[in-house]
Length: 347
Image (cartoon, rainbow, N blue to C red; front, side):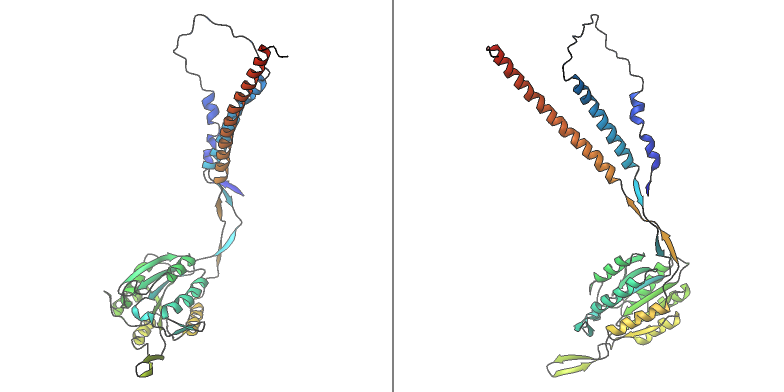
């Protein structure tokens, strides 16, 4: 159905009539003492001339009606659709330190670095969190709020896809990331607050230690799920041949497990993309999506339709004036030619 956002503006429709019927201002010009009679010489085109005088009034009236409709903001009220109610607030903190560029992950049969794998698998997880308000924190030397809390999962995923390594440094500020999440959660008190922290190292930077940030999270009732990223074994070529190394030697699993345990969460170890997918499936069970639904009716603006009609009317009328101005000139020229012929004695 069609509705108007500002229906009271429709009251402007009779405004031109009110102005038209206002008492005319008395002219200060002195009238002539001698009134000259008007010669009555009605041509055959007098009827069409009267119609031409009415045309501007009709066009202007229609333009005024369409303009009033446009400024009243007509809207199309669509059918009611179900939207999930708010489930929880979930903040996602992603590590962008230098070690995230280690290519020890396999994705679709090819080796990729940890961040590339994270973008693909975490992106699928974000799309499934239909009822949650999601936020995105990127951290390395410092922690930054990339996306505030929003239901717009598409934007959160896009911001994750656009993140780049070394964007905020090469170190790892886990404490700052947790503290920033706590600060953002504190704005809304009545919700289930969940922080998903993904890192492949240990705290090596920042102004707040993980222990201090943990105390803040416990005090605010925030549940933290920590994920340690990185393979256990990686083959590395060197001058002395191929060596087996542990690319996750800097991962502080004990600290991450302690943070999760103290906040009522859980620590996960992601050694490959399959393991990461299983972690997200488990998180869907630990933090189920809210099933209650609300309804909303989408609104679509329609003001541009009457505005376009008004513009077309004005443009069409101006074109008609242009052609009507040219046509009489041609007819006059033809009549003069005929008179010249009669003057020369033609029949």
